[in-house]
Length: 53
Image 1 (cartoon, rainbow, N blue to C red):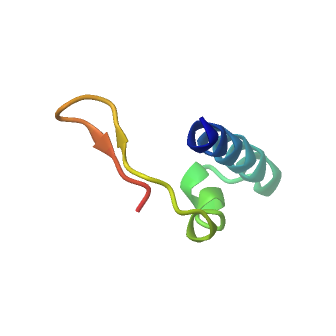
Image 2 (cartoon, helix red, strand yellow):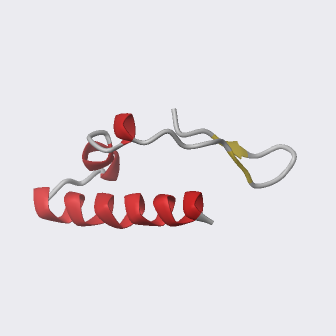
């Protein structure tokens, strides 16, 4: 539950950061936050796994 909350918080922080920086690409804003949080892989299905790295 805490991991899901952290993911949502990072998504919201990234969206706000992209909006604040007037960035066209959300990855530019999220790159600042990712090294600070150790997230586990997110398994959506057997063939779709999202990795934070």
